[in-house]
Image (cartoon, rainbow, N blue to C red; front, side):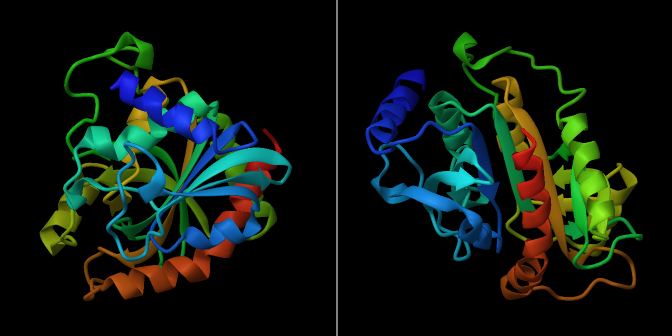
Length: 269
């Protein structure tokens, strides 16, 4: 895999004029943050050697290089999911690529279903932990160039960034929560009993992404911060039928609040 990664990195480096310090992965309905970036170069996923191509309607499939609040960034406008039929090595391939491009921090966003009864639709939840119910992306042959074979996951999400984000939320009176994200394969949305199970085992939200990318990033020594927009509720008495359009609509409305937090955090790095 290392050879393939280096081939992709070499191609990308020949197309860009800046070396990114920070990576951003934009989730379902959250591609609008790109409007805040002073864009230098845009690469279509389909043009990048060895890169997967997003098959989800709300994911645009672009690798964007530029500046955000004065910091050099690379943003993935659209990510990949296990349910699309990709292996987890393919899902996380871009994370390894952008690490070799030079990033030290990774900011991730997603849309998720809230299972904590205190949460409301439109709330923001900063991840302080996760429960992985997706196969682990580190299963398989190990290359020491990527980091430890058995990475410690006791502090996967950076505590300093979490505390700063909570303070930003308080300053701007935003509906910011903190909690545990349960990563599942999808693509079906959850049954009422599945929602109940995720709450019992310690989850506050549930979604179909983020965890594989974070595991790989953490293994490679990248500092991680993730934020989730609660787009629907898996709480008894509040469960209703949900479509992708519903999810993207709620995510788009809450995105400016998420973007504000991300921008202020990034400016402080």
